[in-house]
Length: 381
Ligand SMILES: Cc1ncc(COP(=O)(O)O)c(C=O)c1O
Image (tube, rainbow, N blue to C red):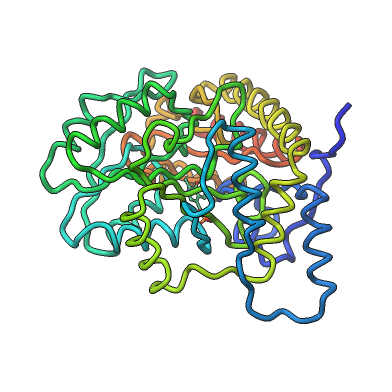
């Protein structure tokens, strides 16, 4: 029996939600947060903090490190040390700060495309160049092309690889063997690995391997925010075993002023990692079912959902419609109110794709799929 009712509809329209900042009647299924209530243990922890009437500056207590360490050891088989870890106000602030501190203006930073679009901002806003290692695509699923990876890493100006493990938007969960190959190529060419592991607890059926379990030389950015739906609390951990690299990054995070928590960040993260496991397991079953339902309907429309083992994002191959994803996304929104992410923003072969966030009650999922079907029918006429 399910303990948590993920099908309960919650109105988010009056909650300053970025996702739901849309016109009346529109259905947003774009940005990656969930239309699902958080685990009750998180609400309880925040309520406890709220009931103390002073909201001054906060510290990061050792119990924060311990909560992450215990979770990663128990669920992911990685034993982290408390001194490897530094609090940060989010994964994106961490990536931008690390790019500024660890690489130089004019350097190349490698990414495997299509990939989470904000990586490009963190690279290009600071005068670095993005070099794309396009993932292989066989019409069903994406794969890592190690020859392509070696091509971009071996360029003398390439100094960093931003890895997305698991990968947004394709839903690939990189295997231990693949990560070992990535680590050894990066070592061979002196490239620092920054592994963004924000989606690691949203895995259905496969096993996520922490990058740090195959190499002690990289940087991992981890957080409870995506899996536990607390992104608005702005909290992440940057984990670096190597002390010299760690000192450099910690200096950067501090001087960029992104190393101190707001007064709900720590208690919410600890509550999630200490008490949220049952909720998370049920959530992953719920997401797997939503993905299965969506994939089936999408196939009936003559489109194709890419095979995915992680995230709650469905990456839809719309090649059969022969329309650029920007135009397609705008058409669907204008005609039906369904708001999806256009694939072109993720680069690589993304301009043939749309991304649909299915972390919502089934009633909303069915509504979104029906709207998509309406738009596809109009286009096919
Ligand atoms: C791969 C990836 N990294 C980072 C983020 C955002 O991280 P944060 O909210 O901690 O800055 C997202 C959000 O969708 C994401 O998909």
